[in-house]
Length: 137
Image 1 (cartoon, one colour):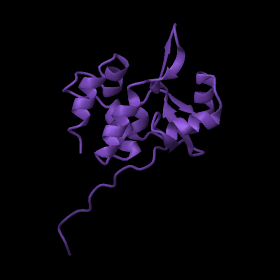
Image 2 (cartoon, one colour):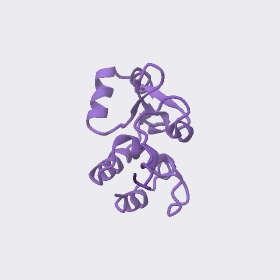
Image 3 (cartoon, rainbow, N blue to C red):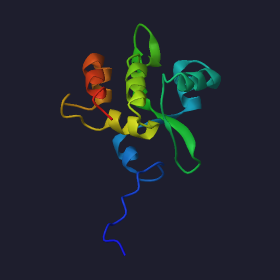
């Protein structure tokens, strides 16, 4: 019999009070995103496929949802997907992170930037965030 205890399971799903739910303040379903952007769900699905948006299946019905923080509203342009998100998601994907870990990384405080990466991206600090993202993995 081995003295080694099994490694803790990595979360792959976010039902109930999972850690990701405590990090992400608000979630949107794809129809909600479409409504916010003034487009159709098919276009939102393409945004997900093109890595403009990233999300997870969550909730009782396991619906695909994305963090509301990925959308920004300006007086000039209305509501849009955060432009700096895609490049950062691609850097993290290239480092081998699955979507759930990408979301966790974006929403957990990052000491080297002094805030969460998503807040830094929303504040226009994409170069700093991507520099740190390149060290992940």
